Image 1: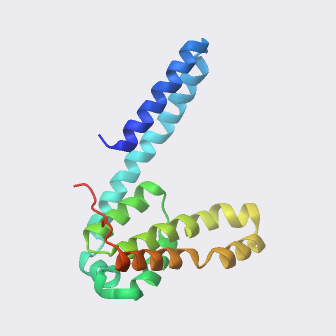
Image 2: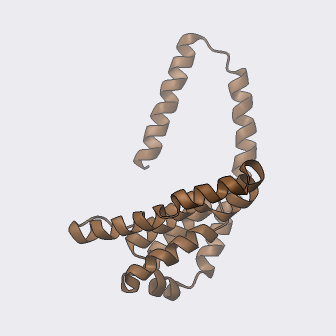
Image 3: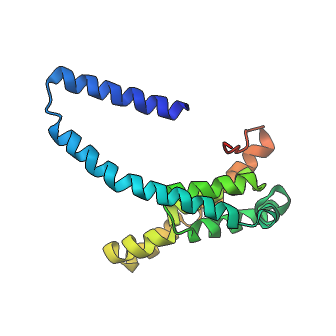
Length: 172
């Protein structure tokens, strides 16, 4: 059991205790829980299976060569472009990051990848941003945030030169 799960469980129990003390009706909460559970669990299962397939398809040697310590500063732009191109939600994106870590990707490359995916995932741009906010807003956002993944990776690289920090170690 990890610390994040323990914190969420404590929060849930605290909210449950508060609701019981206030005498809240659990009908709407239970209905919403069932709706969310029925919608999210099948998606999570599919995403985890897809992440497993992706983990087997990604060539580990290429990852080590392009995103590893030997790639140096070139790993930063490669990781930024890769993060942009990953058309998936967090379950798959972080599973890919874990595969990268197991395959020898450097910590700065992983920081760049996750930051780039968080800010510029192409599927969110195409599905949500352009239709809802328009290309003019997209241009402004790209111009204003384009440097962020690169800076995050370079800062991680600099921090690694100055001090010793932990590397990504995915769970087996």
